[in-house]
Structures are given as C-alpha cells and as structure tokens.
Length: 390
Ligand SMILES: *Cc1c(COP(=O)(O)O)cnc(C)c1O
Image (cartoon, rainbow, N blue to C red):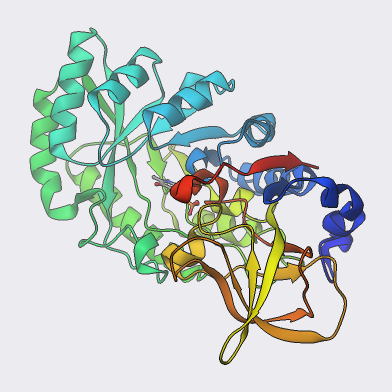
C-alpha cells in the first residue's frame, strides 16, 4: 500500500500530462486499486466461506464488472436492467440476486426468464405478484424475505434503510401472516432471509446489532419449523472519504470476522453479503477543470466545469469528498468549490483549503467510484462525462 500513503494520489500525479489532454470533466478509475480491494475482500470473506455479491448500483461500468467477476463475486441487482447488465457481463444467473421495493412485472418476468438465484422480496403483495408471474411461466422462483430488522445504521438518514419507518423490507409483526401466505403460494420457494440496513456504515457495532437481530429471526423461523439455507446480511460497509490515501482499502478483515463471531449459524447455512461502496468508492476520482475564480463576500469561489450532474452526493446527502488541486503547489487559500449548475446546492465543498488556484487547474474530487457516475444526470442538458481507466 506504500504508493498511497502520502499526498496526491500517485496515479493522478504520474499521469498528469496525459490527463491534461483529456476534455474535462471525466471519471478516472484506478483498476489496480480496484483489483487490490476486491482481492482483499475475497480473501477475508473466503476465510469463513462467505459469499459476496457486488451491488451493481454503486457502479455498473463494464471494466469494473469484469474485475468483480474475476474474483468470483456474484451480482446484487435492484432493477431489471441491472440484472440484464450482470448477465450480459457474464455473471452466472445462479450468482444473481434481485432486491427492490418496486419490481415491475417486466423486470420480474425478465429475471424469471433468466432463472436467477434469488428474489429478495419486500412485501406480501410482491410475493403474490411474483407467484402469479412465476405460475404463468410454470416456474418456481426462489425467494428470500427481506426483513426490516429495525436496526439504526447511524448514518445519513437518506441512506438508512433498516428502520421501521423506512419503506424497505417486511416488518417483524407481519412475518406470521407472510408465512401463512407463503404456504398458499406454490410457485415460490422460500430459501432464506435478507437484510440491508443502510450504507456508509463506519461504526462496526451497528453490524453486531444486526447479527443479534438476525439470530433472533433465525430462532423465530426455527420455532415455526422453518430451516433457512441462506442468510443474506446485505452491504453497507463504509469507506474513509477523509483519508483516501491512508485508508484506500476498507477493513474487510474486521468486518467479516465480526459476522463470523456474532452470527449463529446452523450446519449447512450459507452467508451472503452485498457490498457496493466498500469495493468501488476509492478507485474512482472525478477530474474537473477550473473555469473561473470569483471573489465572494467571505470567500473565493472556485467554479469548476463539473457539477452535481456528474457527482450529486454532496448536494443530495451533504457528503464530504476530498478535493485536491493537481496542478498547483502555491500557498493555500480558502475556496468554496462549486459547479456550474443553476442550483445553490451545486457545491462540492465549502471553505476548502487549496493551493492558490487558477483557471485551467485540474481538480480531483476523490472517492467518487461509488454512487458517482451511476447517478449522473443530463440536467441543464449536460453531456455525460467520459470514463478513463488506468
Ligand atoms: C444499495 C444496496 C446494497 C449495497 O450497499 P453499499 O452501501 O453500497 O454496500 C446492498 N444491498 C441492497 C439491497 C442495496 O439496496
């Protein structure tokens, strides 16, 4: 990990002359770091025979999916087109899981035709519809119940998904009626339970709480004479947005070993994870050029040619991304770093200390590999930023 220890990302620095030739803004991906991250995750998960499904919604670019497939991970999808992207990219259908509160008939039919491994179902109404659509095709769909465990992820409220007030999953008090419903549905087969409580979770004790809840649900199912083969604990492991060099790879060792320590498993049970952000966030950088410097009342604005259309996380979740000037090493000055879009929330960072910045300087917005490019929009009729892989 030596190369990432200090200062501006060496990959960016080494390639600076080449990068300066590219039209901005663009996404830059470090496939080497991606590979190292995937390999580390794979190595730690395999210690316990855990199965990892990569959450495509974090980043579905083909070169990224190729690397994910190369380490043998499956695919976690939340739309029909993600299922399609996974399959067209070479993931085996038996390694594909499909979650989401609002699967359309078209999406379900497509996934049924592909014989995917498992539908993670989020309501009894969905179970009825899935059963009906599977019956039309004379198929039996494998399902896991996505249960809302009412565990607080201690993360931003927009990325908290495991509380009873959230729209996701089946609440504990509904399970009894779901079980009696399942007995009537002949074209679906219950193979497991599924949880996903939120994203960017850095406090590992949250996952310990999740394990406790999973153990309780397991007891409940056993008391109803149901043995579940698959336990899917979702994703959500966070990354260090503040120190991308010091912590380029999340602590997968601690993460997986925690589940090994606290999950109570029955013989033959398989444990599944659905990691997105933790695998791809650090390998991506949004590179942008400074268009203008403008004096404000209390600050200077550095106006970039990238905005919330390329990376919406700061505007949407008030999230922090480390910002670096790749081409200046002058004395540091304070800037509000903003985009060109006609919204005041189009701001990447307030009061950011940067070396004195001029028109034409290249700016790196770090840790943008997850929920960056996939959330890009054409607002203001902007054109889509290119992706470059190094
Ligand atoms: C988004 C999502 C994930 C991945 O979350 P990360 O925080 O990126 O790890 C996993 N499972 C489901 C069902 C999701 O919706």
